Amino acid sequence: SVSAVELAGVVDQAIAIWSGLGLSAGQVDSLRRIEFRIVDLPSQQLGATWSTGIAIDTNAAGHGWDVGSGTSHSSSNRTASRWARRPDTAEKRIDLLSVVLHELGHSLGLDDAASDHAGVMAQSLAPGSRWLPTPADVDEIFFGHDFDRPSNEPVGLQDDHPCRCGRPVSSQY
Image (cartoon, rainbow, N blue to C red):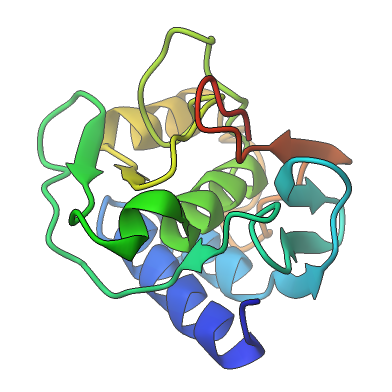
């Protein structure tokens, strides 16, 4: 089971990763205002984004969370970045950072990617894998951005977007 302290640390790390890819100050501020809750989500759900916040499953749908640090990544290329986890117990767990990054992506306006897409907004996540956002993900945020909206207005959360994950083969958020 993940603790509130562990989740807070991962959320801070995820916001720093998104921020480092060129989000506006208003977008970063909106991410910092999102309320996170740890709840027992149904079935294979790992996380869910809705209009007022993000819920994270207590135990990664029975797989257990990998909350280990590991910020070594390169998101400078324009394609999806996958960082393979170390071959120990983390290999059988779900990477909490990947799930938080995915859910924050929804709050920024990104949809789940096509089923054959690899990346932070992919519909699947295998235990032991880490997906990180790339500049291409940020381009998608800005491409869909309403530039007539005042820059200090927070980016809204998408309503009721459950994400499922946890099955070793064809896992889904």
